[in-house]
Length: 426
Image (cartoon, rainbow, N blue to C red; front, top):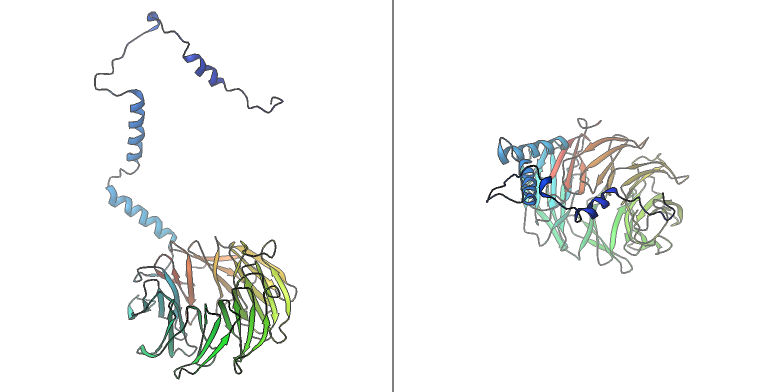
C-alpha cells in the first residue's frame, strides 16, 4: 500500500477518462444495427428490464391468492399456539387464567373492553363494556370468587363469579397496578397520585397508604398478609403495616435506587424482599429491618435510565430457595444466588424482557419479550428449553392455567394466544 494510505488506483478510471478522446472512424464500423423509429434507447431498455424483473417476482401461477397463501404458510411455521383469540380490536394489555378452572380466561385491552372466554374453544362467556378508557388490569381473587377489572381512567369494578354480576365499583386516580391479597378478599392498587389503596370486598371498607408524591409504580403483598411493599417513580420504597396503615420503613431515593422502581417481590419466608429499577440494579432487602443486604448489578454500572433497566424480579415460591430472577430491558434473564449475590446464569431471550414468571409446578422460568415471543428457561441451568411464538408485536402479559398445562399471552398485536406447554417444549 502507498505510504499515504491512498487506495490503489482503479484501472477503470483510465478507461473512463479516455472514452471522450476515442475517435471512431468509418472503416472501424463493422455493421450498423437499426433500432427502429419506435425503439427505446439502451438506458430505457435497462429501466424496463429492471421493472420487468420486479414484476416477475410476484407473478405466480395462482396470482395474488397464491402469494397470500405462501405468506400465511410462512407465518404458521412460527406460530405454535393452540388457539388465537382475535376479538379485541386493539392492543391487549392484560390476561389471566382463573385460579381453579383451567379453561377460563379474562382479557382486557385498548378497545375499552374486557372479555371472559374459554381457552379451549375461544367461545366468549361474557363481554364487559362501558369503560371510560383502556382496560389494563385484570385479576381473579385467590379463591376465584371475584374478578377485578380496572381501566386507565381509574375505574375499578369487581364482579361475582359465577354470573359476572357487578358487586362493587370505585373511582380513584389513574391506576398503575392491581393485586389481590394472597389469602383474604382484599384488593390493592397503586396510583399515579403516590397512593396505595386497600379495600375489603364486597363491603368496600378502605384504607389509604400515602407515598411521598411520586407515582406508586409497583407493589407486592408479603406472604404473612400483614405487610406490603410499594416502589415509587423516584426510586424510593416503602414497607407498610397493613393494620396500622403506617410505613414501617421508608427507603428514600439514593438509599434505595437512583431511578424508578419497576418491580418488587417478597420471598415467602417473609424476611427477604427484592426491588428492580430503571437504574440497572436489583436490590435485596431485609423487610424486617429495612436494611439493604445485597445489590445485583444487571448492567455495566448503576445509572439513571439505564439500557439494562430491570423490568421485573421474582423469587421462587419455595421457603428454602436461595435464588431470585431478574429480567432486563436488554433482553437478559439472570438467575442469582441471594447469599453471595453472584449470577448463576444469564440468558439472552430477545430484544427486551416485559415480564418474568416462574411456572407454578416445574422449575421453569418464563419470559415475555418485546419481539413477540415467550421463552422458557430451566431454572437450574438457565438454558433455553422452549419458545412460544406467533405474536407479531410485544408480549404485554401472560398467565398460567391452574393445572400448569397451558399458557395464555396477550400482545400489542391485538390478540391473545393459548399454548400447550407440554407440546411446545424442546
